[in-house]
Structures are given as structure tokens and as C-alpha cells.
Amino acid sequence: MLGTDTADLVFATYLNDHHAAAVGGAELARRLASEQRSSAHASELRALAEELADDLRTVRRVMADLEVPVRAYKATAAWAVEKLGRLKLNGRLVASSPSSPVLESELIAMQVTGKAGLWRSLRVRAARDGRLDPAELDELVARADRQRETASRLHDRFAEAAFA
Image (cartoon, rainbow, N blue to C red):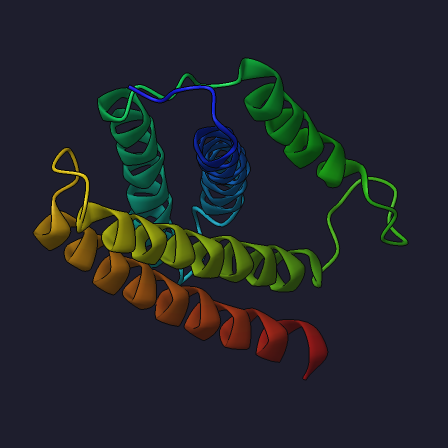
């Protein structure tokens, strides 16, 4: 169980910050996949969104295993920011801009990059904390790397469609 010393509080804050980012990233990916459901990228986006939702559940499980409580206010704020992000001024009144999926794929890539850092940090902690499975964390790092490649590939396709 985490105590009240500074290192434990810093660790709990770190995990909650990543949890909030995972909430936002999963929501964004789910929405992008939904908006692109009839595009050539639909299956790839749907698979990425499903993986990000799985990763969010994994973050929650790891936090529970480590007895770190989820700070609901951070997750709620991340959820709300993702919803407010839909209101960005893009020069169009009703339809989304062709640049929206470009920007959204960039945001997903940033979230995935951060999540890979989380898994690496937990891998370091696993050396002294038996509640963490080093092999699982290695798999999660590799998965995040694949997700980042997918987001980058999708970004390039969206940019080509928007700016060519």
C-alpha cells in the first residue's frame, strides 16, 4: 500500500495524470473511429480505439494492484477537455474540417508516446515491486510503439487527404 511520504504521493499523482491522459486518448480515438467508420481507415482506427480502451482498463487495474486510488476529478476533467476540443473553431459551422483528423491523430500519437513512458517507468519500478509484471510491461511498451506507428501512418494519410 502506498503511504503518505512524498515519493508515494508523487507516484500516485503520476499514475493519476496518466490515467486522465488515457481517458482523453481513449475517448478521442473512439470518436475519430466513429467519425471515420465509412472511410478506408475504419478498421485500423477501430482496432486502435479498442486497444486504447484496453490500455485504459490496464492502467486502472495496475492502479488498483498498487492500491493507488483513481482521482475522479482528473479523469472527469480529461473527459470534458476531449468533449470541448470538438468545439474548436475550424472555419466551418457544421461539418468538421479536413484538418481535424490530422490534428486528432497527432494528439493520439502524443498520448501513446506518453503512455509508453508510463509503461517504461513502471518497468523500472517492477524491479522492486512484485505487484508489477515485467513481462507484461515489456509487452505494453511494444504495443505502445506499434500504436504510435499506426497513429503516425494514419496521420500521414489524413494529411495527404487534407493538404494535397
